[in-house]
Image 1 (cartoon, rainbow, N blue to C red):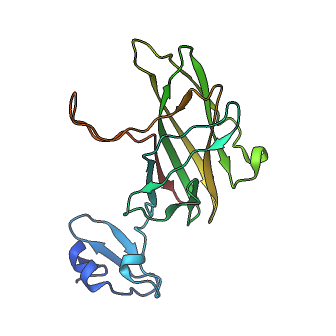
Image 2 (tube, rainbow, N blue to C red):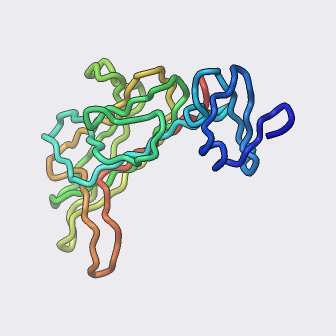
Amino acid sequence: MSGPFKVNTRSQWAAQNPVLMAGEPGVESETENLKIGDGLTPWSGLPYFGNPGYWGSFWDTTSQTATANTPTPILLRKNDLDNRGIKVISNSRITVDHPGIYSFTFSIQFSNTDSSIHDVNVWLRKNGSGASGDVADSDSRFSIIARHGGIDGNVIGTVNFVLKLTTADYIELIWATSNAAAYIHAEAAETSPFAHPSIPGIICTVTQVASA
């Protein structure tokens, strides 16, 4: 360590995990990432200065159905173990631990077993207060193509939103289908007719893009 900044490699900081004094800066030599101490928190618990970089990656590997024309929370029962500052509670509530501006991006695999096209709507709901908690102007409609040639219709729906949230706020993805034949489809990994990974029914990533 030298100069006005304490400097170490990332691995050295992790091994020593010191408590920096309030206002004391520390730098990772190979990344130039900066942390500033608060006199209380060990290095591992301090955010990087500027944008703390809270993030979460969530998905679900089970198909989800719903009663026609009935708003229903989308379930997210899998998560990246390295998520930081963002978690899912009660299988659907994407909850932030810190205030900030957050970007939400979701991708949903829809399928349709019927010979007619059916529509699916997806929108955001904040803090679980029913329809009154629906986020204004957040709805999207996807027309799921009909079954054809003995194969179910498949459509990917992808949307991004940026929202200002405070500590313990949560967002749910709500969906409604015009017909139960249109549903959120998940599929296990397969080896035939070609090898491919599993297909999650829903993937949702959340990143803090700015402090607030």
